[in-house]
Amino acid sequence: MTILICGLGSIGRRHLRNLQALGRDDVVLLRTGKSTLPEDELEGLPVESELDQALVRWRPEAVIVSNPTALHLEVAIPSAEAGCHLLIEKPVSHTMEGIEDLRTALKRGGGRVLVGFQFRFHPGLRAVKRLLEEGTIGRVISAHAHWGEYLPDWHPWEDYRLSYSARSDLGGGVLHTLCHPFEYLNWLGWEVESVSTEISTFGPLELEVEDTAEVLLRFKDGILASVHLDYNQRPASHWLEIVGTEGTIRWDNTDGMVHYWTALSDQWQETPPPNGFERNDMFLDEMRHFLNILDGKATPLCTLEDGIRVLEIVLAAHKSASIGCRVSLK
Image (cartoon, rainbow, N blue to C red; front, side, top):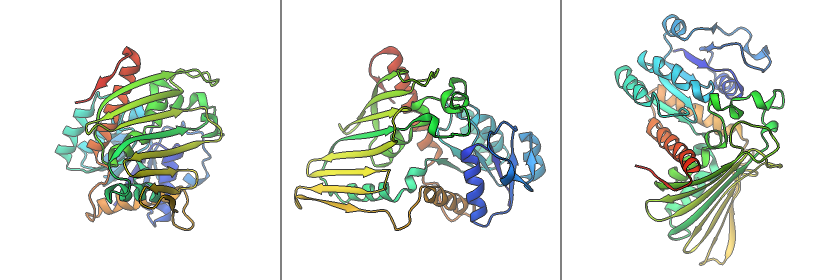
């Protein structure tokens, strides 16, 4: 079985290293040569420069789509037509154009899709989901997610203004690039009904895309959630707080800790991550899950339709910011 990785930026390299750590040596690389990262770790690996040629020559069972967001479907659709299973990095795309073609290609080819929202594999957020399912804080009333992180610190080896995160033509901006909270709020059990958004490019980074967004989500069961996203905050801060009728849950990505307070206990309790937990463990678990999908031992935890729903939320947020009013989702 061959796995083709399309896109060798930081996330593509991470997937390569994790496949190698899991004992996979059947990896082929599709690359344009535009990566700004060192070449050393790619030595000795087969490389292709044309997707069609790679699909014919290697007949990969799986394709990892880790090129810039706006180019995802250029790889995903032909790969799906060829019958490949797909790991598509988030977001699935930057527009809805081509999404129906991808669905059609998958039906014809028979492949399955895992969308790369790695926070589904974070032990802290899994603990949050368990607490909610157990009714620990009663009926949920509201939630707030916050993610601020200084863009130049992401990839210090490159000019951040040239990265896909900073370029509108490649699907950048905080709403697309930092869309994880929309996904994990949906995964925690709430379906978005409408979106209200304000965006700005008020920071000092000289970007052509929004560097700050405030998003208000109304869910179909009446819950309200606010999501703050920015490219400016130092030090980085990523956390989630959920308020219920009987208590509060807080998760912080910095240390992975979950704290929760209930009216019954009248005290804060905590759930730490496993000893030795590191950020890459999420990606490793995600890759193990993908390999299990390929072996027929699992079904995707984050499906294509899950990923499309996040894209719909992001696009609704952009539309709301553009027209200055709330946008309803179907």
